[in-house]
Image (cartoon, rainbow, N blue to C red; front, side):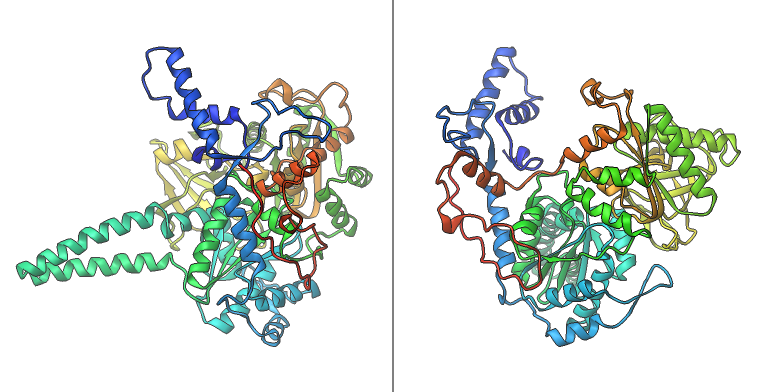
Length: 615
């Protein structure tokens, strides 16, 4: 159950069977029959620890019990985590700092310089109201939600300034889902930012447990040295203990701090609940920032969407990124899954259709033309296989124009990286440090400046956004790292592109793409966002992922993409919906979820009290 709930919010018995098979894979059995019996026994025991979220029937007119393969489950841990987040978002005045409205409004009215360039930002009305609302709320958990291009990062920068003006320097800590995103957030906010998973590992996870074990051993040695009269050894042990305590404090919140989680929709439910518990115990405040209509988390998710739809939420509505007003409005409809927006993009010549290979060529040529004119541009695909094709196409073209050396170092996916190539590092490596003190992050883009016979690369940092000045810092990547964790960096998936802002964006769309991935991809560019729709069969994918024969036009393919919603609802919402669909009185009226309400800054929603969850 623990393994399944780490990846899914809800599951069926097939998922439990798969997890049971995985954990018993290394056990020796007398034969297949014994392995099947063991797996069945594990699943039988696991089901008893799960919570059924489907009623005895999906319709009041049906009396049949769902078959074993149709039964849906969740866990008490998932439901409790969702419940704790809702309660923390509903309450206020529990020791959390509330900044006076006049102080917050005065700070929000002051222009803020962009730490990544020479721009000066003055907050719009909705951004200013969001700053004040979050500052004065006094809630342990607040939520800031906004579509792509609403200026969430600028708003966060002002929130940080307001908080530090009241609570002192260092009173704000930022978290992001990846190392590259954490680095960009740190640069934008001018403060310390970490990876969410790294923070949890060090604060309450294995990192903290290991330090505690080492500390206990050191304390025993210190006492033993004192009994023997060895003062120098005792002092050395005491010094080591103080260093460990200092390291642990680095990963602990203190009263009055503000913990910001950027791209919170990409964080799992259990992770968000753990952060909320840590903030609550310390008397700190947790601010979740993101968009539930963009890409979701790899682990079990849905909690951020639950808070947006049923909790106290502060919203940003103004779209400031896009140069064309029609495109800004089209992205709103795209975000909602309105198929009519496809016609808008088509009318403005932003949609091109054709067979897969032709679309790869067209997307690459348009991307290369934009870069040739000095514009920053992204080339985005839905899957890694298409990214690899685009990377190979881009490199072949650059070799032909002699921008890139033909020979070089072979990478893990079989491609070659030579002098002049753009590459992406795919694993965090804190031991590899650049001269300015930064380290190699998963998702960083570099340009190859030299190749070595042993397979190592010398690379120079390269920013994705021309508004982000990146110092020319060189570093040598060792052969083992290059062989395992480096790939060409001309094209990226939507997951890697989320959070980036460039001048233009070129998106290769396929029928297998989800609405969330397409929305993220089509909102990265300020000036232009174009899509190249593959209407023919694709290679290197499963047959069921290809478009059916009737989907022959780009419009129909894109409408299918908009209908393909990829994010999972919370277990609490799925449980409520099952009761509604079945017409069952499983939850008493006072225990039901509050109906979603229009987002606003003055909404007064009642807290969601204990739900009547039934095993």
